[in-house]
Structure formats: structure tokens, C-alpha cells
Amino acid sequence: MLTTNLSTKPFYNEQAVRWSLLAGGVVVALLTTFNVARVIQLSRSDTRLATQASRDEAEARDLRSSAARLRASVDPKALDLASSEARLANDLIDRRTFSWTELFNRFEATLPADVRITSVHPTVDRERGIILGVTVVARTVEDVSQFMENLEATGAFARPRPTDETLSDQGLLQATLEMTYVPGAGRPGDGGAPTR
Image (cartoon, rainbow, N blue to C red; front, side, top):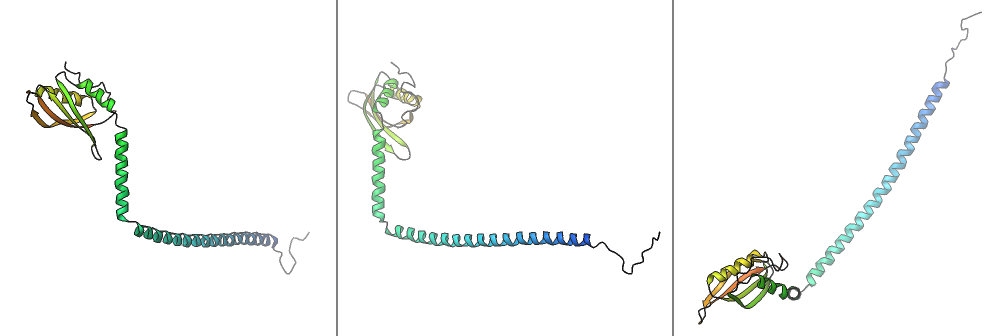
């Protein structure tokens, strides 16, 4: 048997190379198709977003010009009038929710035996809340001081202080007290027990 190759042209296995090149070409074609599809998709998305952005900018311009027209059409006097009417309405609401019963129950629980209340005048202050002006008649300064201590001990009255003190013809001390009142703080029966 002869083991030598007598052909003039040697045999090469070209089929494996062809299949490798074909597979590589298919992969390149698939990747190219995917990239082209993504570029088209992103281009459409970019166009859609640019269109939406230009619409939004136009709408923002329209809204800004509309707001400027509305600001120019607002009458400052009418705005001040509406604001003062709203404050008045809020004051009326605050007064409506003020409980005289709760206030007098607190006074009853804290009033010493020798002190009498002659007038109570509440006012509503936006910063400080409800301010009470209370006029009392007492035998001594100590009785008025005891009343103020009892009020402060309830937690519902803050910083009671005398604003005016006079002696009556009968020798009684008449004092006007001013304090901040917080309805609902503590309980109406809380505080110093009345000295009787």
C-alpha cells in the first residue's frame, strides 16, 4: 500500500472555515439589525420627547403670561378688604368656640375666699392667643397674689400680672389682671386649691 500523496494539489478542509465565516456573518448581521432597530427606536423616542418638551415650554409660557395678567388685574384694595374680612371671620369663629362655662369653672376652682371677680374681658390676639383682662376686688395684696398663683398652677393661664391696682372707698383693693388663657389646657378643676 502506498502512503504518499500523489495529487498535484493538496486537500484542505475548507468546509469548517466556511461554516465559521457564515456563523460570524449571521452574528454580525443580527447585531447590526438590533443596533439599527435600537437607533430607530431611540430616535423616535428622542423626537417624541423633544416635541413634548417644546409643548410643555409653550404651555409654561402661556401660564406665566396668564399669571402675570391675573396679578395685574388684582386690585390691592379689594385684596386688603378680603383679607380684613377673613380676619374678622376668624375672630368671630374664635369667639364662638370660646367656652365661658369652662372659664368660670376654672375661676371657681381657683378663687380664694376673700377675692371677688367684677369683670372679665377676653380679646383674641393673633400672636399670643386669648388674652383675658380680669378685674378683681380683694381685701389684701396677698389674696390677689394667691389667686394669680392658683390660676397659673392650672396650666390654662400663663403669666398673670396686675396692670392696675387701686384702693376703693371701703378700703378694698381693686386690681386688673392680664393673662394669656389656653382653653382646654389642664382640667377646669386643676390648680391650687382655693384658700377658704
